[in-house]
Each structure stands twice: as structure tokens, then as C-alpha cells.
Image (cartoon, rainbow, N blue to C red; front, top):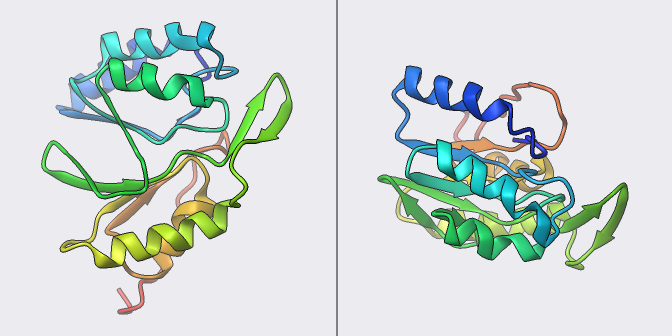
Length: 171
């Protein structure tokens, strides 16, 4: 998450993926800087170096224009439905905010927590609990707290952290 077009990190990511034997590349967004069409090189460069199975939850810097660029570069783009990649089931939604050059422009009137509640319904209706992906933990949290996801991954904070939430069944 939050590469922000730092192409130098692609070799680190590739080396880590190879060392771990990764077959799926998961990113929780902010691959780009401003989400404008010129940022397509950020997506293309990442795709060139990662495993063929890819899924992305676009972040606030990955504007609507980049969704098609992700898809044309082999990424499954989360869309609020259950999606299967490499035998794993995911649910997620792109970030509801759009930020370009320090200015946040909301392009979706629903706020993050409301989106998470909507995803909770989708996740709970699934045959098997999916993995929830979102750029903001505010989206993932209701799904995890609701006990309808196996794991949740998010980014946006620009720091590594782990939050363990008890599920409704106490595990």
C-alpha cells in the first residue's frame, strides 16, 4: 500500500514476493501520486514486476481514471462484490475520496464507514468469509467487527501497524 509511484520499490517488492513464493499480489491502493492519466506509468511499472494474479483496492490517489488502467494491466479491481483471485475470495471497494496534489475532492458521497457497513452485508451473505481489502481501515473495520471476513487489509496511514479485532464469535 501507498507506493505513490516510488518505482525504486518495485525491485524490493519483486524480491520479497519471489522470496516468499507469492503467487498473488495484493495492494490496498495509492499506487499513483495524483490519479491522473499521466500516472498510468505507476500502474504499468508495478504490473510489469509482480505476480500475474493481482488485486487492488484503489486509494485516494488512484483516481477514477486509473481503474481501467489497473484492469488493463491484469489487476482485479475491487467493486463491492465478492471476487475470486487465485482461489482466495475478496471483498472491497475503492476509496471514496480522491486526492490530487494535496486537495481532497470527494467523488463519492458515501463516507468510508457507511461503505464498510454495505460491504458487511455482502461479506455476510457470502458462502465463505472473504478477505476484506480497502485503502482506509474505516471501510474494513465494520466487516471485521461483524465477523464476516477472515482477514482485513488496508493502507493509507503510511506506517506499519496491526490491529486485531475480536470477531463476534469471540475468536
